[in-house]
Length: 198
Image (cartoon, rainbow, N blue to C red; front, side, top):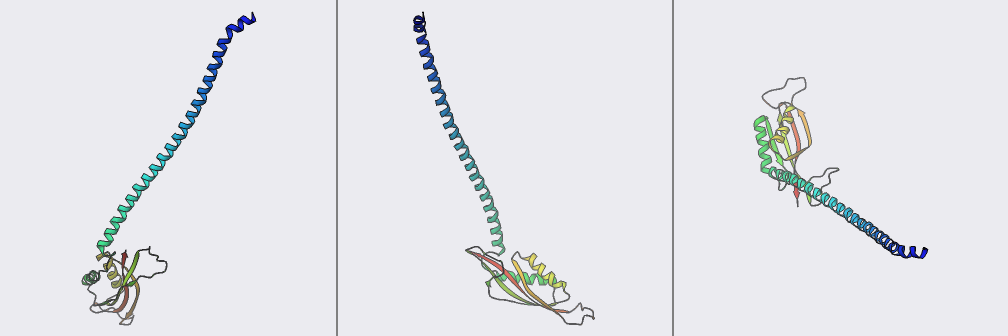
């Protein structure tokens, strides 16, 4: 009876074992396929993130470039970048003086030179220059000096710095100020700044 039972069971057992082997092979193949696909997915996600970051950087760079291009155009049209605009500076000084009506104003615009200041580091290919201007003024009172400098700042968009100013009074401190003629003699050196970008 044992031989008869084994004879009938042999075929289903072999089929079962073959099915188990096929199932294990399919599970292993499916696991391997899932692993490969998972790695490909992770690579694709990393590539997508990298591409997205590059795209964001490009958009930011374009925005920054547009902003700096506009600033550059504004500075260039104002005369801060490029060749010095001596005539514009003198016209600005004279128009400011016409509004203030200072008793006396003389000026001397000196040759352009490098603008040297501690801590100023220009990028390679960028040259910062300055044109010194000596001003001698007769003022009614001290506030005229600040009004002149503020008028220059408002009338022209060039950058200027004040190197030095000295002031002497014509009359003693105890006497009252004359409203018809200069009470103070002032000498200042200012610098008109220009940037030459190669």
